[in-house]
Length: 240
Ligand SMILES: [Zn+2]
Image (tube, rainbow, N blue to C red; front, side, top):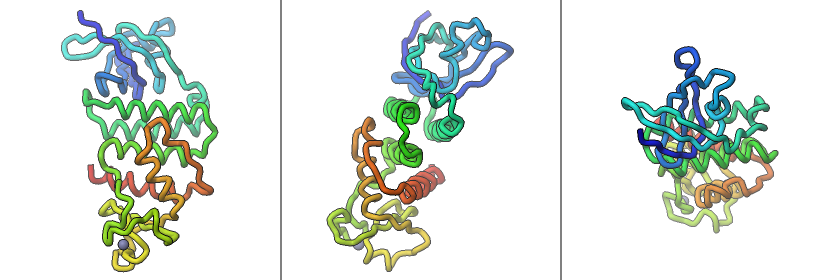
C-alpha cells in the first residue's frame, strides 16, 4: 500500500454511510481530491478535527480501487475565528463554492490553494473590510486561471490609463478590457462599469502582485472595487 503525504484544506465534507465522510481536499501536490475518511464522524476518531470543513492539515492518504482513503492526519490550522463567526463562515462558503466550480479533480491547483489559504488567514486574523478580501480573492483567482485584463492601456486607442489626467476608466465586462473617457462615448454604455483611478490602481495591484500581498492596499471606499469584482467574476463564470 503506497502512502502519499500532502498538505491541504477541506473545502467540502459529506456524510457517507453512518460514520464515514467523503471530504474534498484542495492539496498542494495532488490537486483537488475526494477522500474517504472512514469512521470520521465518531467522536473518538483520530480524523475528527482534520476531516472538518475549512481545516488545514497534513494528510497521509492511500489509494485503493480508484479511491483515496485517509490513513492519518495532523492539524496545521483550524481557522477558529472564521469558524465561530457566521459572516466569515458565509464568505468562506461562497469562496469554496467558486473554487469547486472552477477546478477539476486531480488538476494542479497549488496556486489556488495558496490563494485560498491566504484569504482564509486574512479573514481569520485581520479585521479588514470584507469587500476588500472577497473581491481581491475573486480577481486573483481569475488571474491565476488566465482571465485577468492585464493591460493598463485603453483597449481602443492604446492611451496609458494610469498616466492620463482623466479621473475615471471604464471596464467593458463583455470584452474584459478597460477603456478611456474618450473612447467610452463610442461604446455601448450598458456593458461598461465606471471606475475611479484609485480603484483601478487597486485592481491592477491585485492582478500583478504576489498572492501573499493581495490585501496590502487601502481604498477610501470599497464599493467600486466590489462592483468590479462581482461583474468581472460573473462575466467569466458565465463563460466557463
Ligand atoms: Zn481610448
